[in-house]
Amino acid sequence: MMMQAAGGPGLISPIDFGERKKPMPRWMWAAIGVSALVHVGIGVALYAQRFDSPAPTVVDEGPIFQIDMTRPVIPPKPATQTPDAPKPPTPIHATPMPHQLTELSPLTPPLTSGDATSDPVISTTPEVDQPGTGTAPAPDPQPSVITNPSWARMPSGDQMARAYPSRAIGGNVQGAATLRCQVTANGGLTGCAVVSETPGGYGFGRAAVQLSRY
Figure 1 (tube, rainbow, N blue to C red):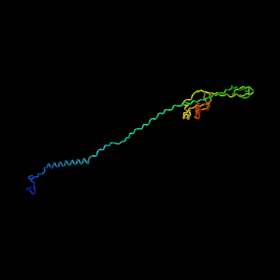
Figure 2: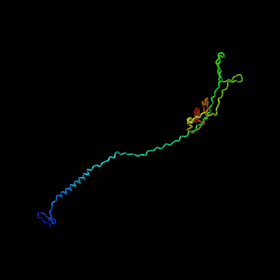
Figure 3: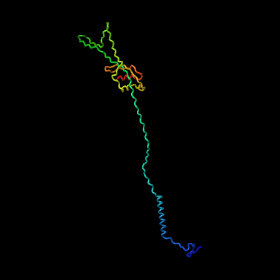
Figure 4: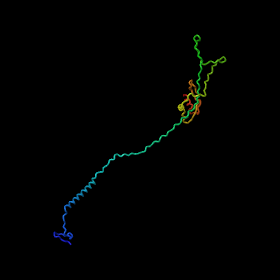
């Protein structure tokens, strides 16, 4: 059921009958304004934090170095080589010949001018009386031969090693040589010649001649 108010046209519900609309108080308007300002401030702060946030700080870590760790290669130790023992010297059979001294006859003193008119004659060959009417010359004396000489001084090992034939060293060959030499007054050898060498073709004779100088 609808009723008409006396104050003017319009229908009024029976529920709202007797109730009048009152104006909103000022404190409520102030509270609404303050709430709106608070919401606006929060929105502005969120917007500024989202879009105006400072850029992250970049920490300079410095230059980057790459180090490769490689295990060093250790060279192998050289093998110790044992030198070969020196080979024994080759025996050399030298046959020195003694130096033959020729005996001279006593010198005849020179004659005076009254004794002879010719120059004196010095004879270096002794006269030998032969039976018969003729005088034959004396035969030349034969030099003495030493078949088993003894060493007055042996060559050193270094001298023997230097004189040893290189071909014999390469073939590991040992040999011997026989020489014919003349012996000087001081016991040295001269005029040495190779009589034989064993084995032949390796140079043992030439090596023996070289060693005879020592």
